[in-house]
Length: 480
Image 1 (tube, one colour):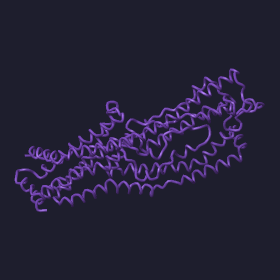
Image 2 (image 1 turned 135 degrees about the vertical axis):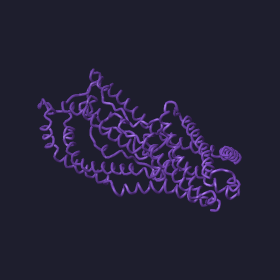
Image 3 (image 1 turned 90 degrees about the vertical axis):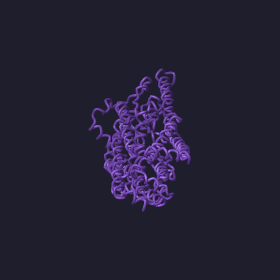
Image 4 (image 1 turned 45 degrees about the horizontal axis):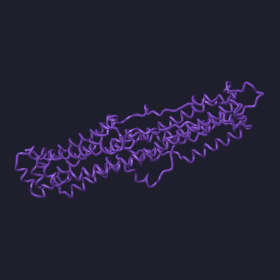
């Protein structure tokens, strides 16, 4: 009987052209969403490439100029700060690019990439990078978000599921077919579950075909990224299964098609819109972030105070770091103008550090709050893992910020002792300048826990459906 039921359901779906409509609709929106994500990734890669090309060009120019002056093919400038061999010139004018390279699946989810920059160029002085990496963005775009694959899967896919399954039982009931069906030895639970299972398989196939085709079209190799794409499908198909089971439970009550539609849309609003919004707002209320304007003001005040006492600070610095004290006091250091900055920067950083720490702690608490409560909604679980797969999560950008700060210290550490020693740059040393390699090894992956959370939702709904079925028998459904 069940085999006959599935066969009849397949014929009905084909005759009503549901399969063709869903395939064309979902493939179109998927292709458009992946195209939007790909454009953002291309812009990101292009901006990084341009900066890296500038570095290569500047290195070649500095190398040629240093070589010319060293070989006396060109007279050195009278002013030391114009000399190409000056360490301060190279440290300021030719900084390395610390880039956050895009992962292959970055086009899947925009995540936090609309809010933060993807490269930084730490220089010999200036601590602005410690205040964050936010960039100017279109406020309208930030309000409505990006139409990427994550948006399609989290917001639109459940609506397709509900439209595809909200009236499975009620339509047969309203047409009178349901009484004829139940005159046969068939369980309502099995009958309804088999019809939904067929629709789940059909829509899952459509989703996988559409996503793979879109990724291939925009140059993402399925073979090279099989593991990541498999995780993507595991998450999305589990998320779909949750919504099919929600429709299953609502259908079991035996209400009218209109009642089912209203109920399912209400569940969608609560799970996809309301719960994530409430969690986000509560995180901002419970753990408010200090004003960035106040941080910048405190930083500038500390800099101004340090400038007033530059000479005294430098003397104290020499006492604390005798290895940097000048060996030859009769020769003027060509970097004297910046040495006082090195001495005062530690004082400035120490005075601003409590404010920065408070800011970072508040952000960390907000993220912890969201991470702990993400299990209240499968939509948050899916968004969290898609951001992880795309490398655009909050954790990725926080890790990138830390990498920039660390490399800034490495960059300064290369020049700082040499400037105190009054050295100059050699042409062959240009190839030995510190370089940064981006890595995400320290970023925690939430795939396993998010998938487990999704499966937990599925099991809860299954358990609930069985309870409802035992209370609402076939006769009860027919009379509802």
